[in-house]
Length: 55
Image (cartoon, rainbow, N blue to C red):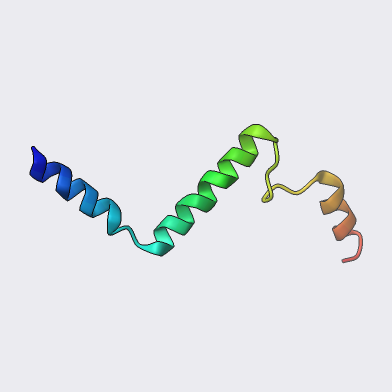
């Protein structure tokens, strides 16, 4: 039982820094979507229309 806990702790410590950064960014994005209704990947309708008028 204690060996299993040690293995789990070791696996958590062995998480790659890139994976940790990705997880933090994903958590922040999900929090922004839920709390503030903000989605940086969604464009407003007028932005799209405005940019297409210059094409």
